[in-house]
Image (tube, one colour):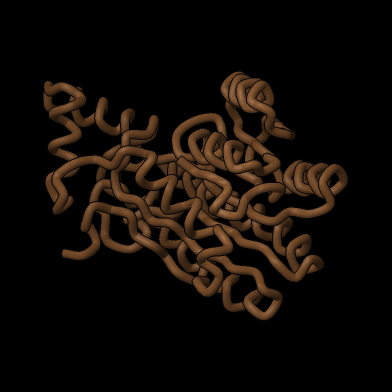
Length: 264
């Protein structure tokens, strides 16, 4: 669980894909640590439910439902936080989708385009609005959610892997561009965690092989040296450390939180 030792008290934190999974858990941890939250997701009902919950616990929240591919709305969304709180200290570009577990030649072109649009272009759009605000303040931390699939070959996940390799590349390029303005840009690369996306993958694998989700998780994680999927909290705690002031000299990195998957 996050606490004020992370240095988040009063920080303005943006999280995309905040309605579930890593995003929702990170929002709750930042709120407990005293941060002010700028949240977005395409799932309006889930986003508003989270917002009400956090506000009931005393957090200051701006929540807006829209797609990260909407450049104009993203700019206005960040502008609303700056107008209310004066700045943007931390941004988690976390929104993303998967593609089916399928061979490259069987991926419909429209599915490939949609995965690239949300996972890669969505991160690009976020950073193109976040960086100018942070540049004016001469400080900031951006964390992009990539994947172990952005570091290694991931058979049957070609579109997803392509999008996450793009996220890693953009992260490194942006970090190089903004380091002199005291802005850090990193990416986190989880393998399999028990989030809605992986639950869907588990259900697909289970249906294909006539096995339970639990057995599907065992099949999915067979290449992971720790032989399990992650608890989302294990990934989120790494996310919070990466953007914390305690981690002030790390930038341009793609950090694996993957049970050893990319070590072998």
